[in-house]
Length: 74
Image (cartoon, rainbow, N blue to C red; front, side, top):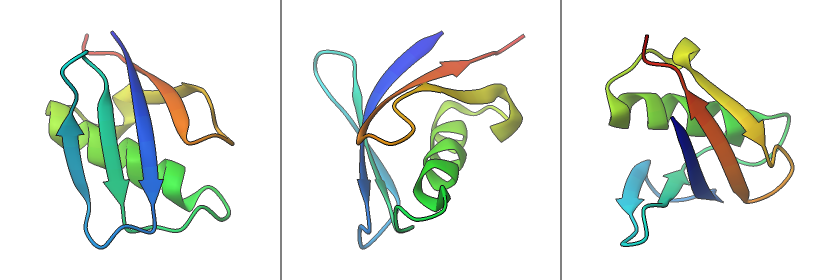
């Protein structure tokens, strides 16, 4: 499964907002340095979807606020 998400680093709290079109907004406390925000987004998305973080992969947008994740459930 692929999910497109808009990341908001440096937020006051970690939270997920679902968009009507099917995308997500991920708010993470971590700053966008040294991949910390990407790692926090993966962890948050995994918690939201109920999967282990090692099943969530960032496939596009590592240096962008709009990212594509691929989730393996099997």
